[in-house]
Length: 182
Image (cartoon, rainbow, N blue to C red; front, side, top):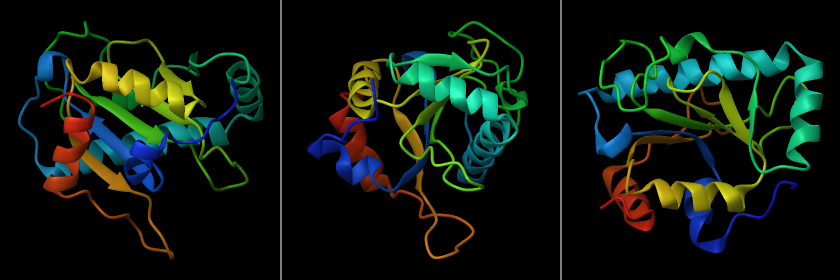
């Protein structure tokens, strides 16, 4: 399954997206500030992208596997995943993904053009997961709306800016309505 076109009703959300952080299972989330969410998102990006930058073999395996399949586990456990715990665990590990799901775009720099790939990071799985099929991803997210809701999102930086624009409450609320998380 190759990377696909973003469905029209999702373009507003995914065309410029860099990273999203969703609540834990059953809409649970420990209290966090925007700065804490941003720190977790940045750690997920740095660690997962570096893993890909460091291994041409891993990149080749990901591209080959995702040409035939919608989803795959890849690499090894990332530090930001913290201690592996059950999906329903509500313990907070500061600076770690803890109960949340972090979804981020693959790298588009240092010679890698993986911006059409999406990485999902949770603590309850041994490794991160990746997909190259946006249609599959949005169906999966919409199905998860009954379990998780979006708490934080940021678009990719443009024109050399250090960081992209954070989504405002209205855009997050519209996204949550679209996935049935309201």
